Image 1 (spheres, rainbow, N blue to C red):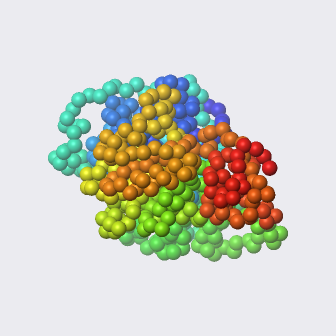
Image 2 (cartoon, helix red, strand yellow; image 1 turned 90 degrees about the horizontal axis):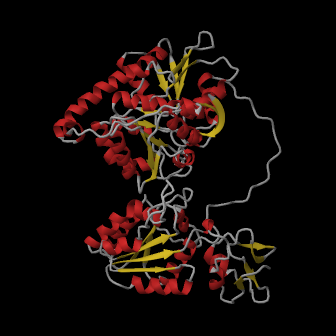
Image 3 (cartoon, helix red, strand yellow; image 1 turned 120 degrees about the horizontal axis):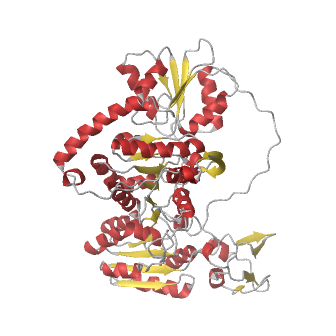
Length: 604
């Protein structure tokens, strides 16, 4: 054993590999992405690593490996579990042979997500065991336990770190390589009574699952990471229960104080009832500090009713703890102070910090998506049009001055939402914007639906040759895999033509005049048609010489700023200026300036 300073996600990957991991696959999504990336980075060749096209594909791939006796891990963020839920619900009934961990990183806040879903609630819904680490070290240790329980009970298990665990750093005690477990899969053994789901099998499996989860309630009460700590305060009849990163906040708030009885829940489902009942004995009140759903609070309330315990359970349902957003050290300290009747020390007055500049999220300087949105906007000027967006960097196209994202629901949804709007408002010119990675992940079926059902719409694929928003991961259109293989690129144009889209045109959005004319021409055609705006992500290319403003020609009309909103164009001392540290020399502003005052290829 030795110590290393690791990010939570890296610790999880390292812990899984130390547990004998054979295969890891997933779909990138903050805050989970670095788990798979770390596994790929430290892979010595014995581990198969894959970015799958979406979470459903990843989960099914991981299940196939686990059917063979392999230890597999599937990674995603909380909204990705929605995509994977179809196979997951059935897999809960079928079960696995090898250990299978489904890592779902939750994002309280939310910091970088559409929703504040709580995977603990999904665990109860799917009837799958769930592990909930509270620190980076615990995440490393617990991932091995998750594989062991999965194998012992022949079930996939959920592993639910949150953003602050995923992206936190700590000095972690890790195994030396000679201590790693080695798992040699037996291989797939044919047995249709086991691996083929049908109603009679499902009924029997359901009965087994219910009995197993009752057993796990008792087993988890003895699990080392579920911890009951006696009260330090004599005669105190109050208790606090927490989990995950909130447990760390509780410990910090109580450091050096006479703490009440404490309970940490590391396995929220099946709930460790025996341990919880031991915790509740002799208490009058309990405060539940958790994020996001009142999972523990409901379980304790149920136990009090079931066992006729006169204990007042407080938390989110009683509004003693906020019921949305992530907890913080300060919020937890305030909750505990209110609960225990403590006076929080007033902070010493400090000098007011300087006001920070407002930095709203914005497309990068040189981002080709800006040019794509601008081209469509110019082409549709004066026409009734709707622009349905999607999840990715290009969601930022909703900001002023572009204002080109009218809807955004979930990955791939814009393609079908566009069709719905078009059916109700046939006089509206309908566009759906989707990125290249998202096209492969979840938009192809929408395109098929549009062709089959004779929609009137223009599909705009923003192809920047990467999965930009989550860290530039490869996808089927990039021609390389996470294992480093160079493979044939999957052509978006060929896919669209293959499903029946007759008009598919590709254009560089940074060639503004050509791009605008292409949009006008293609959008005017009947039926389903597509435009592929193809230009690489600005982060991946070597910048050209920054743009130059000719002060003799510049009238300070600020059209370049008002229409593009590029962070590389700023106003300094009342004059429009190019910020050379940001400008990539993409040339879009040179084509927008009506006075030809901007040029590329030099310095001011």
